[in-house]
Image (cartoon, rainbow, N blue to C red; front, side, top):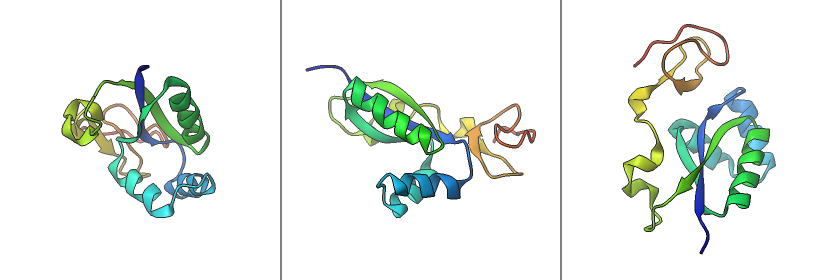
Length: 119
């Protein structure tokens, strides 16, 4: 059995409306898109081979998502059971007060350049 990977949505590059439209064009139900946007950073696909994970990540990037492909070693198959699987804690992220982009805290907003505060 080969190595397994997961795809983590870290945030989005464009507006939520753009991401929602592009993901629904790719067959993802609108309700699912809205849910993952509220949960980001979030595992959006897991238990994939490396090529499948790369193809899935490329499709999400084309829709305006910022994603990471990560090795996945959880043999139980449940990301919720292992806090390490979701990456940094939520306290490492903030929402830009200017444009609403969820992203890592510190520095300036990746979308609008507004100074960010760590939450």
